Length: 221
Image 1 (spheres, rainbow, N blue to C red):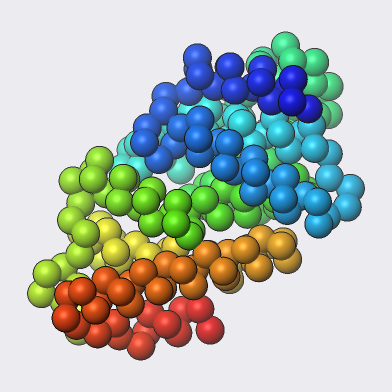
Image 2 (image 1 turned 30 degrees about the vertical axis):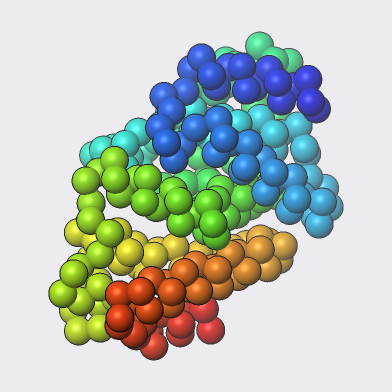
């Protein structure tokens, strides 16, 4: 597996358009998450899971690209010849392609295999916790999006809008992720990482001499 992983990483370094939040380190973390979850599941094809993990962002489109929702399908299509060259069977390639296509939040494709469920959870875990905090702000900085609304930072009396304010994205999507995990291990890890993010928000509110509205904590209930 380590030899295959090294080959996959080499392909990614050549072929993937990387950005601060979607780079080889992201793929390594997602694989660590996936491997950790896979140990708690039965019947997982680790070879398929490994290939799908390292190729899931093979086509990496900007967050604000008009065809962003197609990126996972495009990645699955682009991955096929590389997987063939690496000795994957047709059935393995088909399984890896499904896992790649179904991992995406925006694509809305239901995962229909253990490998697809695990990759989806593993990728979403990298949007939570300490790394998730860092990635949020890296993406926001790239897009020129402010941290928060200076007049109502935690949306106490306004509608949430993550197209304008970076922190709003936590409420609208990231802190919802623990409820959307499909594996038991993924849910357990996600809840722990989301609690860390909530603690960060409480500290941020304290440093701004304000309070964090109750509707934030209720997300994790």
